Image (cartoon, rainbow, N blue to C red; front, top):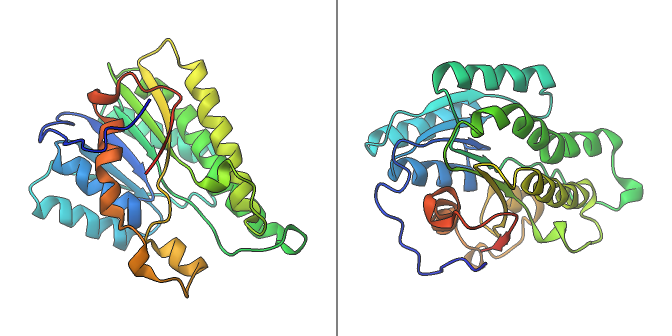
Length: 247
């Protein structure tokens, strides 16, 4: 299935929808959160840095969007009980979820596998693979209460093409690709659709840290990805299930 590149989302595309976004304090997560709110969604901002989440909250409020919610969580150390508590809080306050965007990611450095620090390996797998699994599992009940729920796993080219030196990050994205497709197949007969989205090279703090000498003028800005995320989260993409989209 192809993404309509001339897509123009309706102003009320996500009206009354409740959407949870991880890594919402910066980069792609911030851009998607603001775009969702601009199109009527109540967004739940999940991230580890409260200051950044509050800044996004303020931007949404100043733009006149529905009141957002902030849920601070450091995915590196989050336990199954933490995700269970999150789901319980969402149930109590919202009653359902109409969208879940897995955007948070960790890439501390590029390294040969033989030199990769074991502790960092564990952290990357936790944030990039274990956390999306646990969060989805705990929120399945909330998602199935929606008549049209969309789950987006943000992936990477490294998840389908093995690259030297990408270490735990590349392996985690390979796992994420399989995880998303498995969820999609298991939820095929439900109201929950699952898809993958590869943003491609984007001007984010994560990329600047790994490629400090890169020419930033050649990179797309996170805001340019908003329409693709909006399309996948809204009703116009209801036929998309188990697909992989590239920006």
